[in-house]
Length: 111
Length: 113
Image 1 (spheres, rainbow over the protein chains, first blue to last red):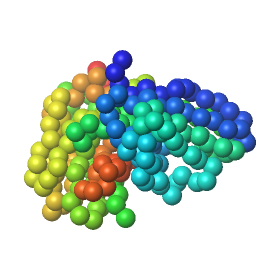
Image 2: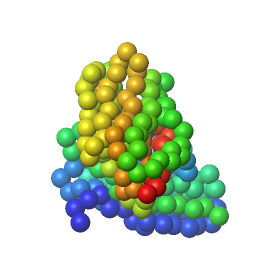
Image 3: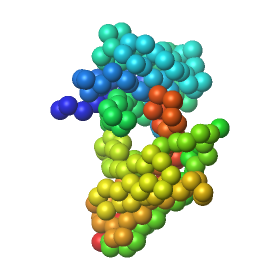
Image 4: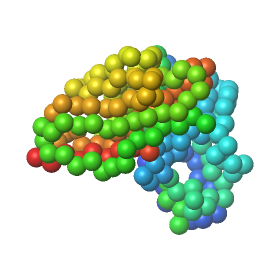
């Protein structure tokens, strides 16, 4: 499969725990995006990387959230001290010729 | 701020019916406009796009025309199929904005035989 892959697809955790999601973009794509989608809403932009540089962060990304792309390939999104309001689908996308290609997402449920 | 507004769903149609999903936008500058589709259990996929006023995007029988005067990008299809059942998202990007997409809330379409 040569699309964007995300792992895990589903994560159930207890409030206060830390979680980490991984995104592997399409191999030749140097731009990578994270979005969050809650039920009944469209995806909301979280952050953007060009290679390993994080160039933009949304105000939605509180200090409990951190994203990295250390070698300019895969990326991780970590949420510390999870809250019930963090329950959502976390989407990753990479870009080619102006078109974003999305992964299937990582669904987080915080109990 | 920049935003996209879509008609609320769900939209329920019979097979072969005509589809319109309304989308309007607010943006500074000159956005590019997109329709994305999310089939059950799958990731978001680009359906069509238009990058300037009066452009018409089309794909798989769907069409949308970029109307600057009404700030709209309505999605249409002349004859829907059951396989078109999905959630449809209208979105925009701004020039110089790292291709960051701003999405509408989505409209769920259910097509019945």
